[in-house]
Length: 349
Figure (cartoon, rainbow, N blue to C red):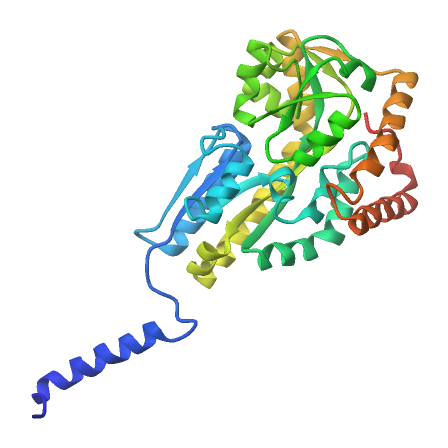
């Protein structure tokens, strides 16, 4: 029996809507909810740029969408955050190379080659050459990187003064959870790593579980780690480098206008973070000196000892914590940059 004439248009409309929703590539009109984690402290410049990024997402996606930001390692260390992202409990993060390298090992060269880089410009030069392929590799593994930036240089903060690599062999030194190759290399060289989450740094310093921690001055200032480790060895061990990343699932749930808004906000964040990184180390060290930090400056002999240590360390890193080909290409790019900018030379200290 034919349906009443008045019913047919509604039926056809519902059928068309169902077919459209089921069509391959069709985007569901549902609210986007982003849960983003970082180890950065609440109220820091890193937290602020994430808030700006979140505001861009909510403005573009409209009412009903949300962005929830977890700071201070509330969701655990970077290994924990990645695990939560993979099972859908989190879907975005601001993460350093330490975490990202467990997904894509080639990114390690931007942070895990100690004493190779002398300036942020060198890091940027290498990054521009290598990051496009890194991003493709991350995408194939389910992650979308939208912004890369450095966050200052790692120094060693300790309870007692130290000026050479040998001075640290008797120390209980913090090591990142989720980086077993680094831990094994440290042991191989005669050091005593203590594997911890980032959130455990301050209480572990206070209880004596560790007595030495590699940190950026900004992070040491923000967490007041210098109160428990009042000596800083003034050598720029390595840059801290990282990215804002989304799971591909939540990225694909966003509209194209939102992608554009996120990338615009991310680029603004990169500029702000780089400007901040250029001045934050000196400003943070000065602020900590006012409250009692003692800076251990290095003389020529100590600098030679650190350079020799790096030469001993690099062969252990190559092909182990990062692909050998990427390691070699990074060294080539650094040499290329220095040949093009001879006035930019100088020791990393």
